[in-house]
Image 1 (tube, rainbow, N blue to C red):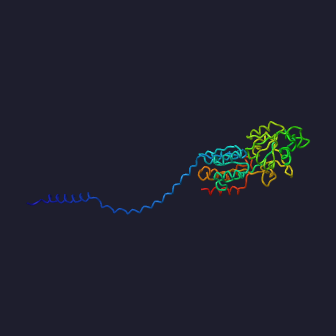
Image 2: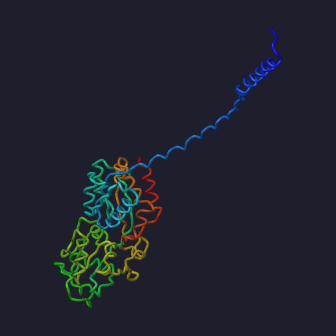
Length: 345
């Protein structure tokens, strides 16, 4: 049977269209994926900073009433600005009383306005503490022993060193030690001198007794007190009084007291931060003041060692001595102390 030309043409067109449809439906050839560049190696992360060691716990200090204002000030600054979790407790029982607590190990520091005695060093040895190893001595400042009188006393504003010694020595003028101001100089009032001073618990008493009086007995009429504030009050209310104590207590009470200018042989010298010093005009009444550290405790208690380092740092006693009535020591003295503390493990 013959197929008509028209029908043949239709068949051919259908076949061609089918071919194009198949080509159009086929997916286009995919390009080869681009080769990824190797990722850069991540840099090692910076090591995390270790958190600062937390220092906490108590530091126990007692001893000298003279050193107390300076040490209490240092404690306040330290707890406020350096280590708020450390509790620095500062007492003022007196130098000798402080050593009585320090020797058996009740204190971390013992403040003193005189150097430790040989007998006290022996007691430390008996307890197993060795000076220079277990116990370290630090000078913290220089003090000027100051003679004070009532502001209404206008006659004894200047005295010689020897006059002060003689008036305080027992038996210089009479056996009962009732001494008149006119006994010192005839032109002065014929009124009894009322002698005052700190009691035997204080290094100031011992310094005066040993270094000023040469270990000779003090007048029996001397009224000796435990609290320096009591002495300030007594003299401020007594026109005929005289007392001795550290320069810092005078500086804090200049509105109530007058400091006696002392003539050591080259004219009267007023105690001041400019004259107090071992090689300065007020050298005759100048003395170092100390704190003693139990280094064995400092090795066990981070807070004790840290506070000791603060005391001898430029931000410690050197900075605040003058504000508390003490002449500061040279920086190299404290640098030596810091070396000792850095060696404590």
